[in-house]
Length: 301
Image (cartoon, rainbow, N blue to C red; front, side, top):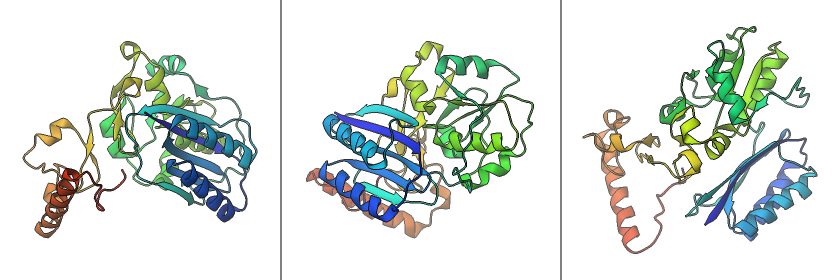
């Protein structure tokens, strides 16, 4: 089994290139895979490895950046390594939103545990916002939620400005980091009733009894597990090699689905030349699988 560890921490970080190399070496030495993003405002990542190695990396992050606790963490298990390789990336922001958190002021603790979250979103006065991308929203979401329908998170503030200040606003995302920045943005604009799901969807699915859950569907994750269900068990979705979007078992029954080539989402938009290339790629992948090798065209989701 592999431990999958998701985390973020808003903290001032300097010497980004130097720290990038240090972290990259550490991930390689501990045989850890996944992605860590570092910026002047903090770090954000999801990594996977053996339990003892993940513990060592967590301790190393605390020591390297001199902090006691992560702002949020998510722990789950996988029967296979869900990432292909280790990556440490330098970004201007841990989440691109054109919003700096150097002068971050939180007026109150707006993070709600699953039980309090359920009570809040059952209230019809609450505006429930799914802060993720449209294709993630289609895989699963909370009943009654609204998706801003923005593919670029930098456009999210434009949507937020349209909200009424006197209504309770409840926001959620996969691990919580998008909502962390969005809530700061709203509070700085004078919104006082902004709440977010503590630990994000993953924490909710891990700790909530399915019988008491208000979640519908599965949760898309950006690794080779593709989607997760309650208890953080691997879901039923796979990935289309044509458009790199999640596809359900129902999608696979469509005449427009062809393994490694297309799905109902992209079939009509692909050229015959593209389909021919994808078929050749899939043929090579199938041949590689028979010999127990990983093919060069297989990508990390």
